[in-house]
Every structure is written in structure tokens, then in C-alpha cells.
Image 1: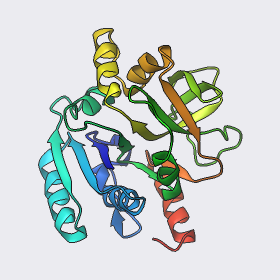
Image 2: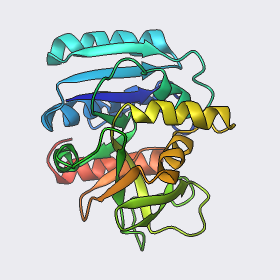
Image 3: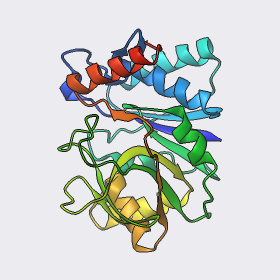
Length: 240
């Protein structure tokens, strides 16, 4: 199975550490390299990475990592990277014919999440999102920035950052089919170019499902506080 990784944004809240957020060091290793290695460890054998801000520098890094780590990496560019993330996902239309993993370049995760997600029974017109149902006292989640999910059994009812009623967090780890691309096109036509907008389109058709990650760890590294927490996690695991 292959993975789509979105690495197009600027990451202003970490710009005082590095102007290139995907290359911010987590321990001694750039963040994007961590994502690639974690996914590869979980059995992902090919990658499509969408770049945007400072695309030339990110591509150069990926070319180097591809050779050093023996990874198959195809790089595509989103010239509209300053807009919403759904446009970056849509750039990969045509690059995937079957199921694929969708990851964010700033979300660190336990590899067992992907291992379980790969085995999830998914129809050809569905998408499944790995969700964290521990919404009480979750010290690794920034409530202001987290994307919230309202689910009913294994179905997504609604998703978005500003949900008032929710019972899970979006981990940024998806198992997708090409149905996500047509859903994004439909959402964009209706004025919502976010990835969540595309997921809502599928949810309205009961085609968006969830997999609870249980007590497995994930973290969205959006600012220096989250970076410090992630470094501590890796240090505790002996990986930093």
C-alpha cells in the first residue's frame, strides 16, 4: 500500500525554529523524515508527497531521503498551497487507483494505528478516519486547533474544528479510496475547500467511517509546546 502525505503548508507557529516546518528537528531527525519512516515501518512501500511552501527545498530533501532510506517518493506541487488543505489532497487525483493511506506531515503516531487501519474492511466508495475517543483530559491535544468528530457507532456524522458537540478527535490518519477526490471536488464547488468538507460530503452519504485508536499515541505538532511533548514521547520510547 502507498501513502499520500500533505506537506504544503508554512507552519507559521514554528517559523522561529525553522522556516521549513517539515524539516523541524524532532530529536535528531526532521519531522517529515519521521513520518516517512513510521509509515514505512508499518508496511507502506511508496509515497506521494504534496509540497507547497518552499517546494524546491522540500523536494531536495525528499530526493536525498529517497536515496538514503531507499524509499519510493513521488513529489507533486500545489501552487495554491496558501489555501485550504483539501486542494493539496485533490492534487493527488490520478495518482491512486485503489486504497491508500492519507497522512499529515506534522502528525506523529504509533505505527500500530496504521497496521490496524490497513486491515479495516472498507468498500470502494468509503473512507475511514482513525479517531481518538479520549476527549477528556487528553494532554496531547490542543483543543483550539484540534479537528473534532461527531460519530455514531462507526460512522462520521459531522467533522470540523468548531463543532460544539463531538465525541472524538481527528488524528489526521485516513485510509482512503479515490472516492475522496470526487467528494472534495463536490465540496469545493459548494464553497468548502477543506479536507473536512470532503469528509462531510462522504458522511452525508454514510460513506465516512471511523476506527477508534484506543490508548495509542498520536500528536499534532503545530507549535513549540507540542514539539516539546513529541520530543519527550520519543525520548521515553528511546527513539529520539
